[in-house]
Image (cartoon, rainbow, N blue to C red; front, side, top):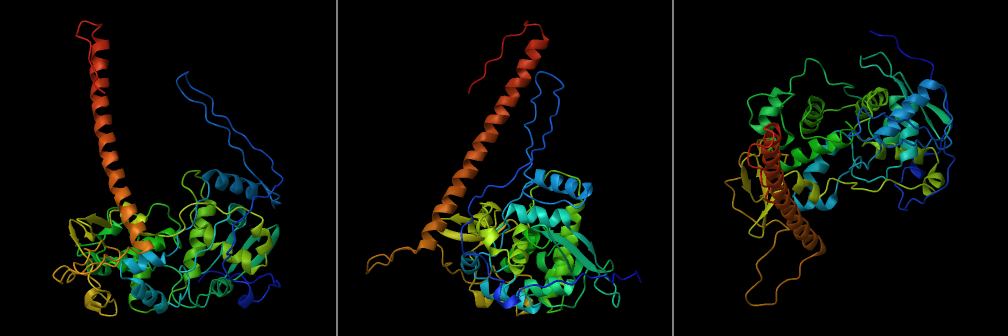
Length: 428
């Protein structure tokens, strides 16, 4: 059993009930003191392009030491993108809203990840660059301490405090056990023989609810911009949700934040800034956030995102759900409820009678005037059509690149021959 941290700084904060409310405003631009740090990469030849200057905005942050400043600069170069939360329209269109809420309720999440928070660059970088966390996974070893800075004020919290601010319960595992095997749950969810951490795509998960929640976990708690592969930690959380077993969510979140803050890479945008916004609101910084500009971008795992990931496809005016190489219309919500354990594998979905999804294009009635499409249906049909057009354009571009590659190879051979061969001809 490791040592337990005991020195926890006390702080005075506003009450939770009056402060954790997602902003309904649009952030405004504000002037801030900027100190520029630039770096040039020398060109090795005239054909090598010189990298653009990296201008770092330090705002008015007071750094505790050089290590703090260095972490900030590394994180700044990575960039910050909007956090993707649940999209209610997508949940309803896929018939999975009730099941998602049931999974969340099983671990005491309630509205966690259901409510969208804007992402702010300054507070994201301020929090992560200053984060120092010592947490303990063993029972009876205490919670440790989590130290961070926001708007030049340092705070020391415990895991209990973190869960309290995010509206999450305490208790349950703080890490995925090394003895826990993902094979049993993976076989149920995908019908694959065994789980392979290097080659287990999330889109092998058959049930729409479980596939959606796995990707949502990757985008939020586990802070991954690319979540195509299902990770063991994500499957562990899904397993706990399905069996209504407690889990200490903040411990997983803090571990991810700490690992992110200590990485030296400057690639891959930071995607979990939206989960830092509630801390700023709790500490009474709403007015400061109102003066800042939130990150623009997609802030939810919506229907267009599902289409781009090839989860759904539109054929003959009907939207189909894709399971590996199979496609079918989703059955009614009550026939695929996760409350029935037999439905977890989603193996009995295909033989069910086909029914139209709420967002599918319907044939007009013969005896009356056609029902006008709802805004959601109209938007969905437009987006799915656009996605189809994009895929066609991507295919054409690949063919053009292949043709160009062949031409360049022929041209290279002609140059090496000294011009003795007939000059190649490229057809655009």
